[in-house]
Image (cartoon, rainbow, N blue to C red; front, side):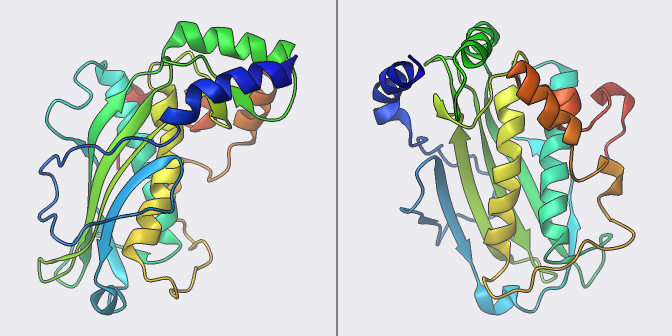
Length: 259
């Protein structure tokens, strides 16, 4: 029964599995040289990197992410704060494994990140999907077409001399068939997309042969809480839902000042 349901949903999702590119939001200092990645299935990725300059950079200051233009205007202030916090959390984790996270300074590169689009998650469709995934057990999850959300972001690494070293224009929507869990939160899918976003930013700003470092002690990302959230995995396994409060490890956004 589950196999039949998955086949139907897969047929509906065939033409929509690749996320459509998002227009330039004018957040980056420059768009020249951005190359579209053709080897991705789920995300839209355009990126560039000056390998020679990137190899000379060790210290990076993480500027707090921000909404660009009208992005997120349909969200509440709490939802906006939660989403920016999760984007910052995932970026901090990935960058700290490749660079020294540092305060802003004369010899420090800067990483700027802007959320340029947020597609809300359909809570009713997510509830239906969660029940269906529990009643029809099996590997992966399926979602109700037309109710999945997503996230689009632009990010760039600016060298100490003020010039762009690397840049990324990234967008990804949750899939109707796959591993993206349904959520009753309007930003549930966008929050889930923050993790692959952080991975891609880390890969974009560092050359492939850069050594992955052990987690520093003290952890520069400690303000975001533990790097792993076992309670979130258990909650998802039991309920079939992505629950922001346990999957991101955050207290309510209005009570937690962003670093």
